[in-house]
Length: 540
Image (cartoon, rainbow, N blue to C red):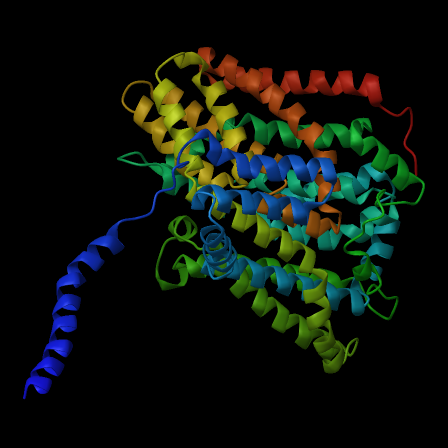
């Protein structure tokens, strides 16, 4: 009997203890771990280390990974287990299990497969031959790339990969370096999307405007003050027409004129060129799949926003999910391409299926860099880098009011450069700007919001860990660090003119006066660059 009582006590007591401890466990689970370095200067160290190492060593994988590890060490308080778990579970696995990121990877792989299909069908070669007879100069090839990039304004990811796939044969024929092509692609991606009213970027910005403000109306009013985007487009056209190249880009362009499109020995996409074949393919084998891809992706974006369920056209873009829209649209375009090539008998079904792994392999470098960049961003987020910068902004927002647009532009540049995300920068800075200016100076609020957008795009444009920059490298099939090194002086030049323009705008506050001044300043800089670096006549 006593033994039975002891057994019952031995069973009941642990159960009672477990019941009592349940609330304590629940309370403990509710407490979120906050690292000691949260929202401090140290939160910016991991991305800065990764970026500096990548630019110095020219090796992006190890640089990004070291930045990730440093972020994990800071978050865990220098413990091995905490670092390992945070980097692997919260970082790499968390990034790859995010539905938005997976959708972008699906879109990236499908684009790789479609490019492989068009190459194997002979469409790329046929388009290159056609372009060779219709586009007679290097200037024409660059202008055609810019025009196509401007036309594809719906989404920056879609822009980068599509323009690269279409224009690579053309720029290669005219001995334009892959680095120059990557710059033209990157500079017509985010800078064009941020001033296009019907785009995924317009929807994102409108969604970040809080309170009673009409987000879409604010976006429209901010377009004339978005100096970086406008001046970048003018700079691209000026560089092409004036035949100006400076900084590291000049060496790449000179080498391209001598037949070397890459300059450096590292050519991560060189195998993709072997897939381009001369066959009975025609121009339509490239043009029609690309047109269908554009239409399907546009329809996919509107579908994700509920357009086909009765939502208005503008509202469907404002509530769209680019990841779902692009992956859905590209899948339908891929199915069409396979049926089209098989029906035309330029490829067999077996040949089409062999392009699936080949297209995937061609995109592996971009997928790896994107994964590491997303992981580094998650490390930075967990350390509160955004909160640190936002705190600095709020503490000094009401000082030097007329200089605030220029200051916001610089802060946006730095934050987007360090984190590799422009949308995240919008989400941090735009609510602060609205809180400072709403109901007091609406015009200065519009200018400051535009400065935030311009700075975010500029930082995103310069950052080696930006997904748009990575996509541009993939679209041009260019070494990623080569793209970053050669693009940086061009982006900084446009940013410097934009900064001066925002100082003027802070005092004048009139788009019809400041925008012409900004354009004249940019043209003046281009004339000076022409005198310093311009070529006397066009080569090839």
